[in-house]
Image 1 (cartoon, rainbow over the protein chains, first blue to last red):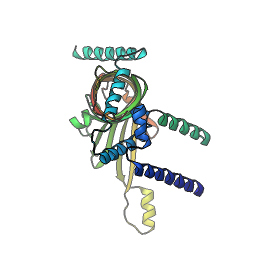
Image 2: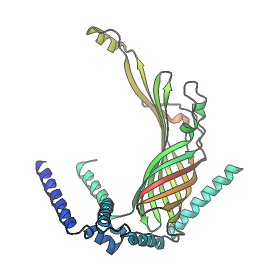
Image 3: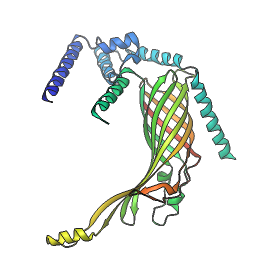
Image 4: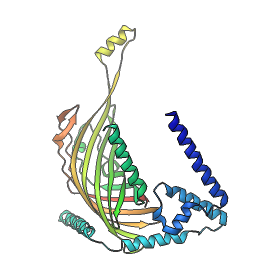
Amino acid sequence: MVKIILISVTVGLAVISAQVKDMEAHPCRVPRIEKVKEHGLRSLKIWEIPVFYWERYQCRKAINNSKYLTKVIDEQHEADYEASKSLRGFTSCVAYCSIAAVFIFLVSASL
Amino acid sequence: MRGKEKLLFATILLGFISAQPKISAHLELGVYSPELTGFESSALFPSPSAATENILLGYGFSYQFYPNARIGYASHVSLELGNINTSPFTRTLTYREFSIESFYRPWKRIEFNFTLSPMYNTGTITMTTEATDAEWDNLLSDFGNTGSTVSRSDEMTASWFGFSSSVGVRYHLFAWMSLEAKIGFMENWYNETDWTFQSNTVTGPVLDLEDVPLVTTRIIFGW
């Protein structure tokens, strides 16, 4: 148990120190920001998301540009829109069943 | 569940969470209109108010497994706290949705969604009572005490299946936060004779939970 705790602490410190070195280099040149710029917001893992937003805040502060990386988010909205601008395959079946169920309920409730 | 199975389950769950970016969680405020006739007609139970009868609080999460489809879990709770005579009680009706939802975006920030949900619901009435207990009284008297009050808490529960369907509109405020409104209904196969109290089947309150209209608003965090 003690070994596991020691290994965890060592690994944690190594990760933090690596991040601190990155931050010292430049707040905008951190892996997560680079990753988002290259592959979009969806490339982040779920626990990277709050860290990314913190790093973006630090980066914006450092370069004094409150709009930095806004375009990436717009592009993500655009990509999401392209991916889901129409119902495909079985998803339309779910939509029709749902609409029919709600419609029948509303009609029967109003009678 | 044994140790190895737990480890396997945890590994799969961790992989599932870490490998995908489309999990979201929500908080919810809803309104519905059941007929809680059993509580209204009860001589002991306080009459339900609009807040305790019609308001639902909830939470849930969903996973987008297809470009325009999600599966998810949502829980809605109707809660009432009060006293029966001098004994405090809690009454909850918990509606749990296991949903499949399809959606499409006619515009960049707005989506329409359509949900079908089998439900597994539970009702619980918990009451804490105080009474004297002969055995405790004897024991405490033996130590030189006079008078004793024993406090005990117990509950009666019921569970039933249901079905819900709704249509909604979601506005994507940011990449990580959205607002949603849904309108729909739920059907409950509730039977008042299926309540359980201390492992015995008992009769509970008559509740009309069939074809209940449901309107919810949600704030959604995540992808």
